View: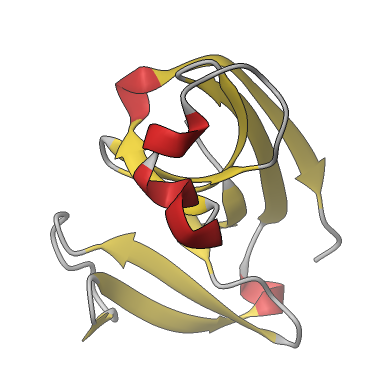
Length: 125
């Protein structure tokens, strides 16, 4: 499952910081082997490349259902997903840690998501 912004660089797809200029910051979880030229930053290996060096740039908008509630998947990381509850649906909203106190975002196991829909949007390089 994918959610967020991505770039294909040297034949491999990397999650990226959403691009806003001529440079693209590639991200790779530290659970993977450090690729050449990547540096550590928090839980990521990261590398700054020129936009012209990527062969593909795209975003993925992902929606799903979690415990009966419609959610937007903001990001995935291995077996977990950062989701945002956007209202509606029938479920135990008051029991969800992410909506207590008005917060509508939280991490959940990917295998708890159903009715997953991914919409890809190609971006100009």
